[in-house]
Image (cartoon, one colour):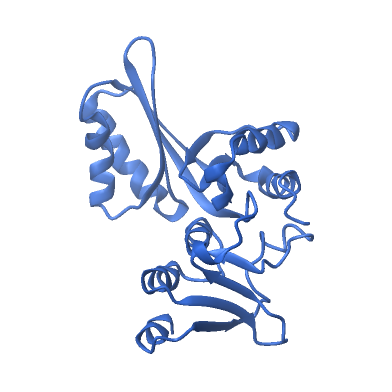
Length: 249
């Protein structure tokens, strides 16, 4: 639909769905979740790739490339929906955080006690990628004895294959231990307002700490912060972050 709209030089491509638009988070988790009026292409791409199911990432990529504004509307009512457009078309007073996305089907793999030397990350992660297993969050730590610990996440369905491969890699490298955990989730906050405001990460971490939620992994981009936490804390984390950033207002 977006590709056709681009070819026709349409002013807007309207996608009719079973929801009123793009919400600040899943309304089934946070009752106060609000349907956004506008959001940028970049924010929608980050939300879609982080677990939001409203639009496929490919649709947003084509819209962004061709600068075709997208509007998500409901097939069941006449609400205005959510306009997804270029950042230039969004008010300068864009919210600090636009939305919160999460992914449940995650698993974590950790390889401990490998030598900290050039090429070690490649020798560990390349065979996983060659097996067509998608790797997401990657964190490497180095201990005082110059041994490294590498942790990364994969889709839960790929855990068994990835774990078997990692055991073989560990044996070849003389690693100390391979550990896995399939009871984790990713929670991401997204917003173009991060570019011009400091303290976003601190607010996120303080909100999680106040609920006693331990952060296992952290990764960031220019407009997104993602944390990996225990699965049992997912809904509590999303609700606390939604409130901390005032997304219900």
